[in-house]
Length: 436
Image 1 (cartoon, rainbow, N blue to C red):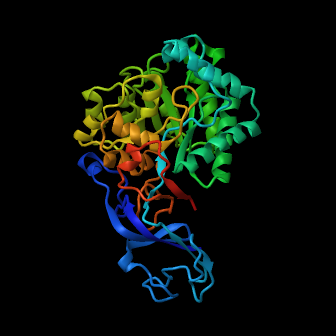
Image 2 (cartoon, one colour):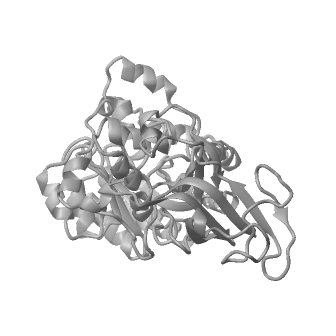
Image 3 (tube, rainbow, N blue to C red):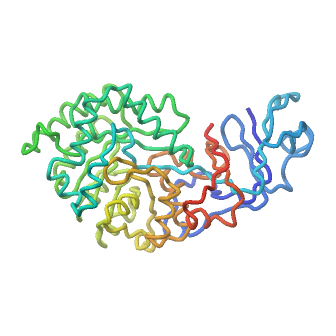
């Protein structure tokens, strides 16, 4: 199947092949072409350029042998039989809208049962995240509910969220376990994530987060729980091939640097690459232990100092900030501008979960990057596309307009500029989402 998108007002997010992330001053620019076209072949971007270079109006007269217009006059394109290799094509008229890569969301917990709207009242009443967790709520409440929910029902609820984020322009998503906290329930969550991979058009990466909290049965016996994660959970997850990555909540009241290091060392024996929760509640040492173990990303970073910036320099680790969590909890936002000024890359992700960020709308995350973190629209765009793709290990195939990459694309309504997307952050802007 071959598709031509024509009359693109702005084709945004163009990068050369081989560019896997943008850092420092590189994040200031979004390369684009005005009045453009883009070709898709077998689900991949095969060519793009200005409309002056666009294939012609009859089969075979353009440089790629495609027609430039639908010969049957259908307003939204059509499929037409021609001759030779170009035996089937579709034409989509962008009508002056922006075409951009789909968002990539590199940090979510969207496989969960029910919700935690009761805790919403506690937050309004002034209880902090730590206070709710100390009373046995938070993650433990989600674990209790997940334990009682069947695998099929968990998949059904999760697919509703997948379809929701896809409709809002997310084309790739990382999903964590961590609401099981028992071996059987962690495996249940990861099987659901695998089922989502198999049935959803989105690109999906799975992360084992058995060390999200200490299960109720192990409260007061944290070191025993860490041994359970290392000796039982990790081998079981690896034996079934259920996870791409491993994560640990290395923070105040959760897991120490030493416990985190033990889990990462054990996971490395089974080929699981780290992605670390770090520095949400305090400066925890989580960034340092993540870099030491060559983590793909260190996530949250609401609490950082210059030491965290320094240790990240020269590493392959992507600092990933979660402004949806800051917004919902009323805690500080990550120091993204300082990280970028120091020459580092920054990714933004939604943290979609039932307790601290109950939204997977990456357009809103892009807007928070601008409104609350004072990133430029270009910096926030890059943080939500190519850099977030890097933070989930898919920037070689997604996150930019690049020949050979998957054609996961958003076609917008005609907009004044790219900045309009975060500026008018509640105005519907998507005309069509393409996820081959």
